Image 1 (cartoon, rainbow, N blue to C red):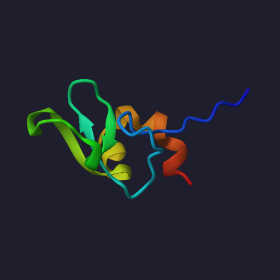
Image 2 (image 1 turned 90 degrees about the vertical axis):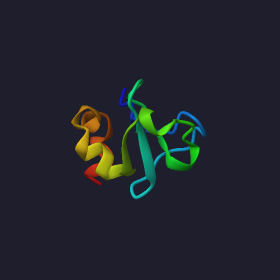
Image 3 (image 1 turned 45 degrees about the vertical axis):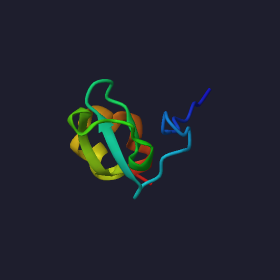
Image 4 (image 1 turned 90 degrees about the horizontal axis):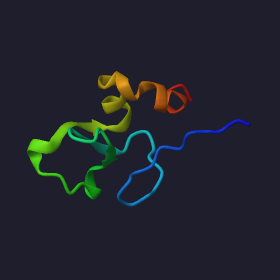
Length: 70
């Protein structure tokens, strides 16, 4: 059984796509769309385009590798 990981914003539940602006939560390490973010600035670990945030935060690379390599 081949399960494809579909990354999504845990606030709006929409699929994340390359080029979208996102933020990385410094506490739970979740990625969400920038316009969905409810975080105060001191709880944002990283922000930028999805592919940039993933590249800078290698912990996420395995989960999102299928998107980067397309």
